Amino acid sequence: MSETIISYRQVTKAFGSNRIYRDITLDIQRGETLCIIGGSGTGKSVMMKMLVGLLEPDAGEIEVFGQSIVGLKQRQWIDIRRRVAMLFQGGALFDSFTVGENIQYPMIEHKWGDKLKREKRVSQVLEMVGLGNIEHLYPAEISGGMKKRVALARAIAVEPEVLLYDEPTTGLDPISIRRINGLIRNLQEQLNVTSMVVTHEMPSVFTIADRIAMLHDQQIAFVGTPEEAKAITEPWLADFIIGGEGVLDEDR
Ligand SMILES: Nc1ncnc2c1ncn2[C@@H]1O[C@H](COP(=O)(O)OP(=O)(O)OP(=O)(O)O)[C@@H](O)[C@H]1O
Ligand SMILES: [Mg+2]
Image (cartoon, rainbow, N blue to C red; front, side):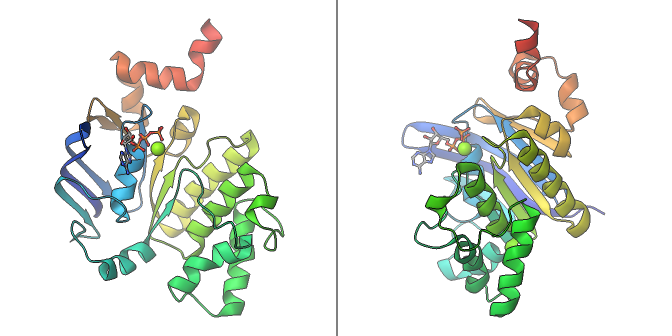
């Protein structure tokens, strides 16, 4: 039986005169992986930031775990942030903390295990993202792709029920991309984690998505399975999918 875990209802958002969406409605079910696609600036990151309390909708309702999150007090966010982790587009590591301290940060915040258990968990999640013993290094000492994977390790460390991945594989090498996509699927299959994934890479979308939602023209212009997406011939979706797969480049 499906259980709605995230629900956007007629959400409207603008920044000054820059209108992002009008009345968008979308439900995400427990255990599914939903990919959000759409052009740059269509509000993909904003959709996620509203789920962790960094931004608020101007109108409409958002429910997480059946609870309205609009207008929550700071204190009330603590429980939600433990259950919903976000991997930020830029990684957002603390530069003055080592990799290990960065990963432990949310664990300490949410009182996850004792020191020994946390240290074990750090090596475990680093292993999961394909990084070896780099706990002692500082962000300045590792590559951009590694930072991205450390941020991912930090997001999964506290075993959240919902993971919001904002472009988890952008800029990574093909092997890392495959590994991260595999990790997203494993978390879903083994722990029934619910995921929202923003990505511009259509091969990744077709590897991991149960459903795809596309933001276009201030609306969720499409929501459906990858198969359904492929069958749509309207250019705003078809060009996106084909262009993203690199087919156009080969045809040229
Ligand atoms: N805090 C903010 N203040 C003002 N404008 C903002 C803010 N956050 C986002 N915006 C604007 O909202 C729009 C959507 O931003 P968002 O970051 O969600 O885009 P995106 O779809 O994630 O794009 P990209 O693919 O480039 O990451 C953009 O026009 C952006 O400039
Ligand atoms: Mg973005």
